[in-house]
Amino acid sequence: MALPASITDETVVTQFLTDYYRDFSSLDIDAIVHYFHEPCLIIGPQGVLAAPTRSVLATSLTPVLEGLRGRGYGRSELSIQQFKPLKPATIFVTGVALRFKVDGQPLEQAGVTYLLQKAEQHWKIAALVTHDADKVTDRNE
Image (cartoon, rainbow, N blue to C red; front, top):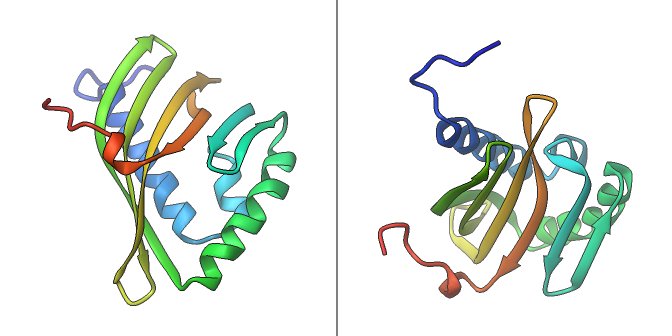
């Protein structure tokens, strides 16, 4: 099914990431892992995780989600700073993930870079890199 001309990849990917952040905010691992490609790669302060399946990803992410829950985590938002199509089925997105406590107070922020791959007509996170938020530049720079 073709998308209407007014719906661009940027619009669709932005909605995909908005939905991902909404579901991530639930801290429900089952709601989170279906956003990821099989296999996927996550690179962060703890090292590199190459998850061949969503089951492996779920096992690896569960302690992270429990840690957030223990710190009073309430929700996350993404401020997209750069959106760059690399190929028709591959898009690079970088931004700042803002995390808030249950009471709405800021918890932390992190730079995030996503490499999204279109698989079976749906965007999926193929690679996620977390980094310092100050390494992210505004899309207007």
